[in-house]
Amino acid sequence: MWLVLGAGLEPILKTENLWKVYRSGKLELAALRGVSIEVLPGEFISIMGPSGCGKSTLLHVIGGLAQATSGRVLLDGNDLTRMSDAARTLLRRHKVGFVFQRFNLLPTLDAYHNIALAQHIHGNGFDPHRFEAVVELLGLKERLHHKPSELSGGEQQRVAIARAIISEPKIVLADEPTGNLDTRSSDAVLALLRQLNRDLGQTIVMITHNPEAATYGNRVLHMRDGMVVDSVPGD
Amino acid sequence: MIGHLVLRNAVHRPIRTAITVIAVAIEVTLVIIVVGLTSGLLLDTAKRTEGVGADVMVQPPSASVFMAFSGAPMPISIGKKLAQLEYVQAVAPVLVQFNSVNGLDLVYGIQPETFRQVSNGFVFEAGRDLEDPNDILVDDVYARARKVHVGQMLHVLEHDFHVAGIIEHGKGARLFVLMSTLQEMSGAHDKASIFFLKCDRSDHAAAAIDEVSQLLPRYEVRPLKDYMSQITSSSVPGLDVFINVMIGIAVGIGFLVTFLSMYTTIIERTREIGVLKSLGASKGYIVEIILSESSVLCLGGVVVGIGLSYIVRVVLLRIFPALSILITVRWMCLAGLIALLGGLMGAGYPAWLASRKDPVEALAYE
Image (cartoon, rainbow over all chains, first blue to last red):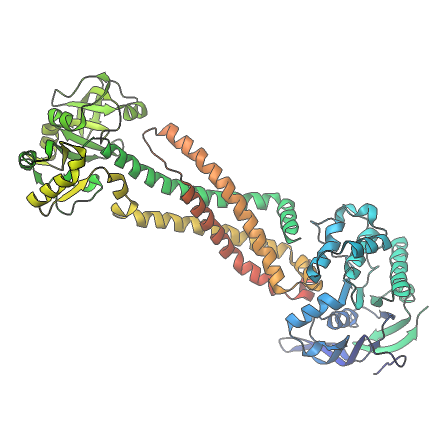
């Protein structure tokens, strides 16, 4: 089903009849079944659905972590489905930022180095101005020299967000970013994502099973059984 | 950044780091000590042979430069012919036997008078020269190592000798008996293993060698001046093979330990690898991290290994004062390089595995 929004702007992300089928011996499981969506630059999209509906799979495919079985994924004009693993890695490096439910910070590095690592992988060297600006925006100045084990859940997720946006990606993909947080921290993180979207124009696609969290986005896509079944405006 | 990540990972897992470093250190120590022992023993033997004071050494045809393998096939009458040569001032026949009872030592059977003419005689620290057929002289290094005193009995070559004197080391062997006694014991009547020649002038050594070569064309005639340079590991049958086998074993140890260490590391850090891939780290980046980590551990092992080599050397020399262990900068560098290469090879497969991990599966790994 096509869900096209707006006119005039080129979508930053577009999927066309996207399928992802997992095969295990003779068993086939279709995690995505003909998903077609568009995300415009500066949009904040929430994707909701029950467990196993394909939300995370969709995120992995559009982020280039997994290869689609059929269909197309256009990310900033690049067709991911025609790319090799190395090319998708390169694209991901420059255009995608990930935020995960379990934060996924490297435990041996402090907050500073966890964020700087993303800049190092990006390949343009350490940019102190950008680094300071991001740290300031996310309120991490006093926590930079603490390891993840010394940070609260909310702080860890802020470090993860800083890591995701430090290299100015075209799109941030957030997989249940508040799934491991208490209510207060969840609200803070969601407010932060909204701020990034509204103030910096950051395009965000966020997966959540929390209806309240979903309303932080401009638009909410509902998924069921590997398909997008509905699209409603957010708050 | 990678350096920081590698160091933090090493510190984060101290036991794994320590075990890997120790294993590489053992590898390095093994190489340095084995080579040092063999080089040291060869060099020590060569120095003491040069220390006899002779100018030329005559051995039977195809004799090894390493005298322990010479045997005794030369008739002693050759000595009289050698003494008549123009540039030869003195000739000392020596019968060499290898003692493997209560240690490994060369025993020189000498004629005290002729040996004195060539070597300017022994410097005695205690006792007297050989007189009795069952007399034995031991050098000070041997005496200290085995706690030997003048007057005590010493069991050498399956024979009980009386320690007549303790001499200063450096004149060939550490043990000296009368040639006639040794000939009797070994059944080599009127035979010698080597003839040491003293020239009238040391710069006549080359001319003396020419004379001897004309007199005894198939015999091995060597100047003692450069004897040390002739003693290498390849002059001892099988020694090169032994050294290479020991190096191979050492590399094997380093390879296996590094392989296991890095393999368990990538299993433990599967999710981290997934995170790095989600950040856009290439396969090459992942491989670089693993190989860098292995290199750092190996380098740590090399440093510890070099230090450990010196400690082992001190301990061995305390227990076996007669040993000589030569630790050279060349072999420290070679041992380090061998350890590093072994470590990189050991980390190669785990690094390749890590680079090929599926990022989605890695991120979901518990």
